[in-house]
Length: 140
Image (cartoon, rainbow, N blue to C red; front, side, top):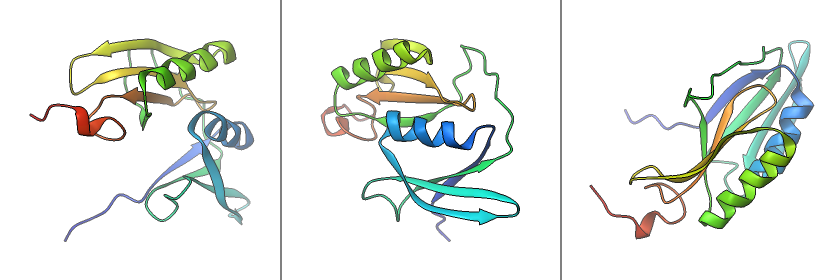
């Protein structure tokens, strides 16, 4: 048996705000929307990854009140440090920057953290062993 992670399902307090966040910050798009058990269920994915991994968003969640030093998060890899800085500035202007850009030893790399409308943290990184830039990183 070899399980494959295909999705994460989240109950969120404001479905439309979360859709807008993941579109704006993560370049995800709605690939499926349907009525389900008295509410709307939305599937979101990155372009060309619709058959590999999705977020399922459903209304009815509570706002997560994570501490700034709580590192529970979803991780998105970016193509450069400049893109991390750009996301951090966009988040600062939107009032949702949690962790300013910082550089840490491999395998952590360069990253910042942003709070989504449901209170989940989203990390944007460059230089981790997954995603863009990984081919230039040392292996351990």
